[in-house]
Amino acid sequence: MSKLRQDRILDEARQTAGPIHLMHVFGIAAETAMKYIDTVHPECRSTLWR
Image 1 (cartoon, rainbow, N blue to C red):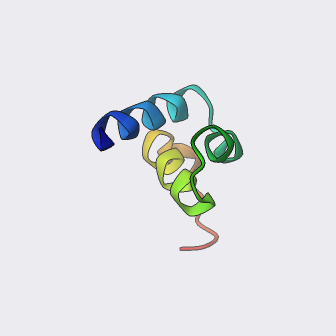
Image 2: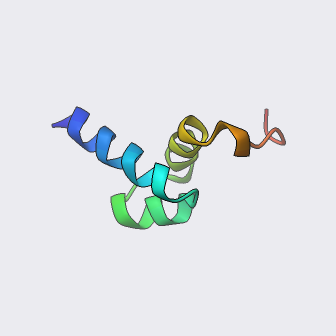
């Protein structure tokens, strides 16, 4: 079940680069949403916090 949820979040992240959308739809934390966004959109990765 966990793998299915992860796949669904990744699919949604591919459709939008908005972490707030992921947070609202899946009830995940900001840090978690950013990890998904960074995974599927590495070109948008922020370097400010690293």
